[in-house]
Length: 447
Ligand SMILES: Cc1ncc(COP(=O)(O)O)c(C=O)c1O
Image (cartoon, rainbow, N blue to C red; front, top):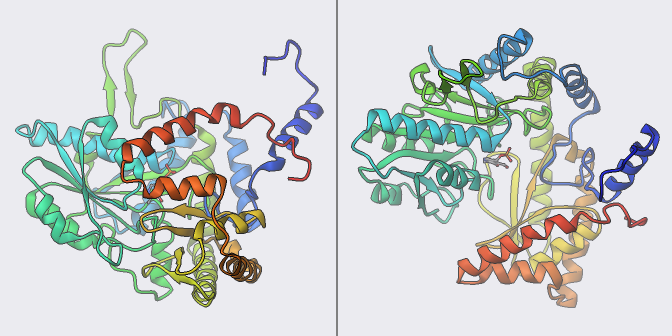
């Protein structure tokens, strides 16, 4: 597209945007099982209203917009309360899980440079199931990632971690829970291992942080994972996941102010003035910070408890229903609202394709192959229809012995290819295609 010389009317502009998004997933509804969180319309409205009010504000300079500074510090203190932050614990808002993790890993590197100067080639231990944002962070800040294998129940193998830890290890990571199977890593054991070496332990609660405290209060069995666990030095948790805030909001928290000091970047000699930046972004969108504050305050403990109850009830119903579909099998023992299942009969990815053709989008996972659901409170309204469709699609695929075609066949093949370098190249080629893939979005009138 070439930039128009003269723009269209606002009505035409809106019409074009609406046309483009006709082929998008159902962002507000409950047919997506990842990427978005289906919540009651009033919660969405609160987030949108706050976002628009602070649409132009910029939290780069905390002096210019004291309102944003106040929102951020109140969000951080509410979250510290929720995660049992001890006296002196602090935090920062960021734009999402990846930024929070990058900050935690960069902080660990700079801490080690100051406190472990003999370590010249730092390493971090992380479970194979940890989110790839941590590998991206390690890559970006120059720390060698050392992967800890998982046990049969998909949790990190602590005995293997003990073998893999070296004098160069500066950071141990645990997920609470990990995304692929929704199970908790043994946070207490991994944190104790880190503490025994005098190094840092980060808990990635990006997906679990805003649900687990309520799940625990509802009486479910949730092993301790937050600052109550000795040895946990930092935690990340995403407001734009189960915090139900607008996209672009997360927190990274530290047990001590002294540790967070390593996160901050300052430059004292810039002709443009004294410069200080707490996070990766320079300009920080005020809307996302205000929306997070507004939603947390609006929902309060009772609101979050209510939504957690709905999400957990929907999860229980879906998990039971999936387990009862002949040919399908649940994986692991998830602690909250993440479900992974595989197929003992029929091609699982074809089942995923058939479900997608009916409007249901689940993540395709590998090693072992599984389909993944992130369950939101709004899924309670669609659980029965989903299960009926899943039963039908699975039966069809088993009876017709349907084979994977196109993208699914490719995905299955790449998942099993022993040469992972070839797979990485294929992924990079695929990403090059994103530029052209967007052409024609919304053109399919039937979509
Ligand atoms: C456990 C975990 N950590 C980190 C992330 C990354 O978060 P974001 O996509 O907000 O960068 C995710 C995303 O799903 C996650 O599940």
